[in-house]
View: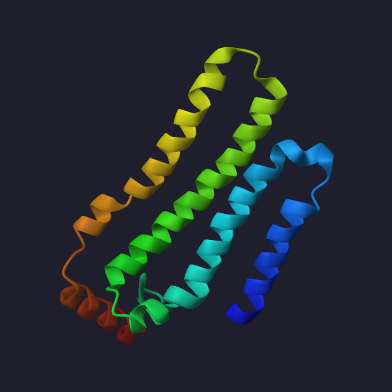
Length: 152
């Protein structure tokens, strides 16, 4: 399905860049930012990692291109989690942009807004680092997961 989504993502970026009405010029950059991060997340999940989820346990295994290149599962999971939070920050950016354009009259927010964006993107990248550093022993967890699945 990736061969279908790449042209659609490119067409979406084209529409945002060249077909957005002039009255929406102030929103164009934040829309393009959200579209970029959403597209990267979509491509990462569908082609690069392609997770295989084992239900009813919360477990999974990547089957995508990154596995072929030998990237460990923990790194792939970290990348997907960071991209999910980055999409959330981009959505927050659209709301902040509308707030800024409609309601901000003081200089305080004008000066601190760039630091707001930077801190949110840094926190999105660093939020899952503790989970990544303390991944539990996989052999024991895998045995419990398979025991749970086979009991059903």
